[in-house]
Image (cartoon, rainbow, N blue to C red; front, side):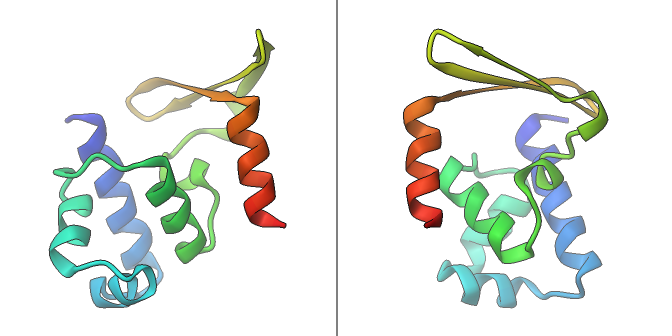
Length: 110
């Protein structure tokens, strides 16, 4: 199974665990049912922005959507980049976030 499909399946499980309909999420995010369905089916590659919007909608961290085991997470700062390592059910996942990206997220939250 591809990464998009794994993430889509995880999003679907979170939605169902919270007894939400696709329509609830579509209304909250102002997207079409086709768009949301393609996310759950793994046909759409999620943008970082959409990932954060979904996390906010479900009131969970992105680590929950990505199914990263927090006990095994590590992070490093190298050349102004923050590198997060996590382990999901399908193996190692690595994310690279620049400090500028993190600063922009902090500004949006304030």
